[in-house]
Image (tube, rainbow, N blue to C red; front, side):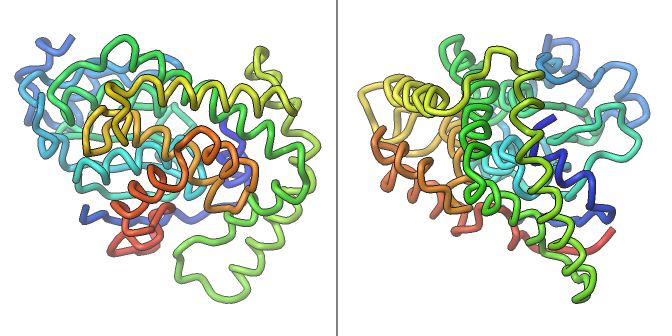
Length: 309
């Protein structure tokens, strides 16, 4: 479980609903399938597993994904990846702050798409499954490997580095108490107090938790070096060295994933992340260009119609 999700799940009890204004042949006839029947033909994947292909008739038609529901945590980098992806490609979606009720998958992000509410878990699987629908093509093998690197290496390296500094971790964890709710003063004060308590405990526990889940992960200066090399790899993947990793003048799936993976840390004012992005050529031009497309709302706090569930 991503450490952001672990902290949030221990003290958040209310889900917040927000709405954004922003083998496939076997699924061709499932465009209008009912949610109850969807479970029989579309089995939700587990973390690290790829999702079943979405209907081929959806290819190149982002609106075919609607209605879309995203279960996420505000400062979860994997959730930020998916949120950025949907917004960049103009897909309207409902965002629910919390885990999906009744699901065996107890993490975020979880995405429900289409009238049949097909469930896709894990940000890597979501990005790969949505790529044909959003771009009209399957995700190429090279981009698939880079997507895996963003999901399972870059974000882990960033977390390990953040946990080396108490100051950075407090900045990061403080964002958990900043959510767009209509709670009163005492509820907000309680969240703030619990966030601080969890920050003190988790800074000691987190490195071991990450090491257990990702035995090949590196910490300290090694993790910073890993991030730099990964960012260089992302940059080199862009054809003709255009501004975006998509190779064109508009951000693509990899751009959305990389931005979501780093934006949470940048907006939490973690200095080393911005420094590495600057050294690797992703800051400020690339970063600010994508942030502008999100109206500066990296965390999705200003998505319309926020109500308590």
